[in-house]
Image 1 (spheres, rainbow, N blue to C red):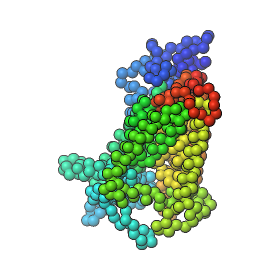
Image 2 (tube, rainbow, N blue to C red):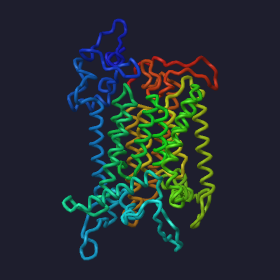
Image 3 (cartoon, helix red, strand yellow):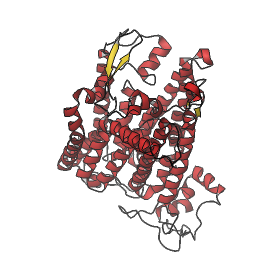
Image 4 (cartoon, rainbow, N blue to C red):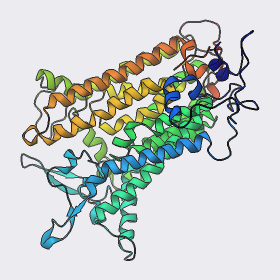
Length: 532
């Protein structure tokens, strides 16, 4: 065993030079006796970064006993820095100019600034499009929208309940700010954007915190969530940071053996965006294999109860407004970022439904996406039931969410934020994850210039869809690596030294009671240290 490996595992081989990493033992993970991960000592990429600030920790470093700059605080500080970069990336779209009637100020989107500066955020146009500028209550307010062919459609707030109410609450705060004359003033939409951004930043900090707590001995892996390139590009593109916060804390609650709280958080996340509810699927399979169906039932019941508690009042009072989210998603054609549009872009294929006219539903496309996702879930369940060791929750969760995005007809660019915390917990290979995140973030650039249009010096559609292909291949590669580690747990960095599942909760080290291939109950393996 090398010196670095001795530092990492806290043990030495007979005859190996003893390495002391601190005057006392390293701070252990709460859930195991394995010493904390030291990326500056065992990861070449991190060691290169550490050289900028003086190198990796020396043998007299007080590892795990810092009073102020603890790993969690450093990671959160890094998140604040990258969130600041994200705000500046969107700041170009809240610039003001005297372009209104009689020289009044308005947003300066001249010259297609939102695409040229690549600062577009849904928050800004939705302020007017959802009638928030009028102080309207979501789901109650309706309006007529005229289509290109002259037909009209009655529209309502198009987001799930908690996302819609977050927009409404942010509008109330923004208008309250505007009513106080001695505060700094700007256009109402600018104040609204900044209020929304503050809340989203706090939500992402919660996501980072929960991921760090879930990472256990590998707390530094959460720096990949804090410093992800996707945070700069999409942290404030839409409201997805709210959902990642609910999902991340829900996973943490499950890991702390609090199934009811986990269910409540996942249910609230599902009332913000759909994907946190998808995590109930991996939990079902893992609990079935471990004979923990009572705990899963508590979680699923709590999730359903929380979702109903939020949705029922709006559904009963404003049924047409509440159902708008579901109506709109059933009517949507293939999104520009979906694999179906990619195929159409390169082949000229008209899609499963052919030419659609206003009011037509893409019935065949909806069916195909559902069947494909069900097939993916069945494959993941088969892997989970046949693996030599029960997979970790984060591994299956990433596979399910990635499978949903790859097979779905809509992959809005900010949806990639869903994968970031799950990827870090599932596959903590820093260079691999950074490469994927960089590729995914890069898709934003040709997307904006595709929307700009070739006539305005934009790029052809195929330049954009080609980058989508590369992104999809990168996500599929991550899935393949995770599946490989599920079948070869000795290659799983998280399971170093006998760790089973840091966020497994009641599943952690539980024996199997149901498995397709009957063998002895799997136990946590002692995994030798591998360099990331």
